[in-house]
Length: 83
Image 1 (cartoon, rainbow, N blue to C red):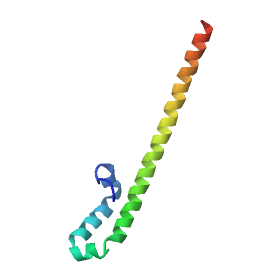
Image 2 (tube, one colour):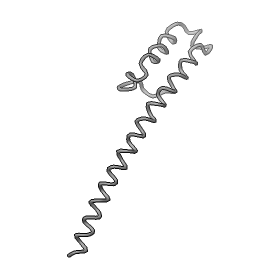
Image 3 (cartoon, rainbow, N blue to C red):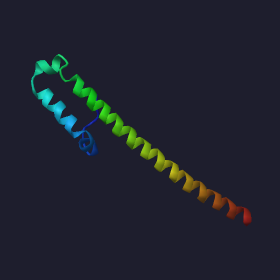
Image 4 (cartoon, one colour):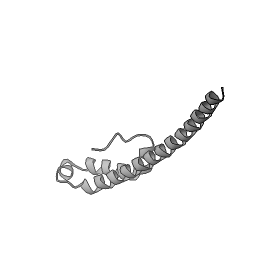
């Protein structure tokens, strides 16, 4: 099951989302017999790649914030020691 298809996901995987929607609208039998499974797998791969890119960006951002915090902590520690 894929997450809600909103925001930047629609931009990144838009053509695949539209193709899956059209496949589902083409009829119950196609949907029921797995005629849309290949398109769904493509969408899953696209969404996974988008999620991994977003996750790695968050990790980088978190590491930068952590480095800044450690600098502040170290400067505070040096100030306390000099008192």
